[in-house]
Each structure stands twice: as C-alpha cells, then as structure tokens.
Image (cartoon, rainbow, N blue to C red; front, side, top):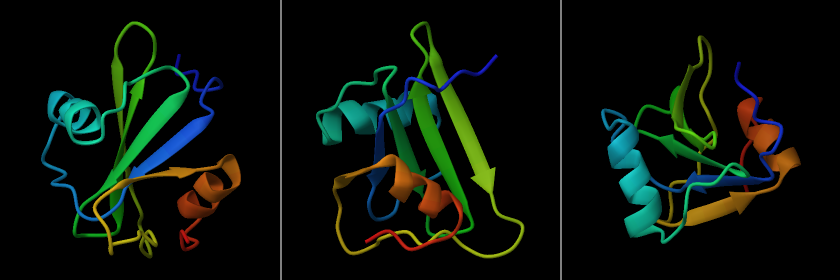
Length: 103
C-alpha cells in the first residue's frame, strides 16, 4: 500500500523535463543536477512541455515509486521561467494538484 504520510517536502523541477525519462534518470536529475537526496519525507515533481501531465518521484524507504498524473481537462500551472528546484509547502502542493498557479 502506498503511504506518503511522511512527505513534508514537496519539490518541483521548474522548467521542462523530458517525461520519457524513467525512475533512474529522474533520480539522477534530483541527485546530480539539484544536489538533493531522495528521502521518505520528500516528493519530487516534474513536468514536460505538455502541461496536462506530471511525474512524481518518491523514495518509500525500500525502493522508488514513480507516480504519473494526466489531467483529463485543463493544465497544471507550472512555472517555466527558471531551471531550478523549488520547494513548496503542503498548501501550495495541494493548489498545484487542483490546477492553481504556483508563485
């Protein structure tokens, strides 16, 4: 069963990510490009050029979990101006999942 109750840190990779990438490539981006470690308290979100879908990478303690969400209507309001890792709080994360714009 998927238990993400320990997640306290939500990170978005601002800009574009090639969503053809799998677990190992996304984990490498987190570690090599952003200098972060995958831990049970962190969720990393990636968005491609098509803003109706995102991928999330999570470390469950004994392995990686890759989540994929595609909206049937609308788009994620994903920031595109920078290439960085931005931390969101729980409220901002919920807003992003509901289609609100990330500041």
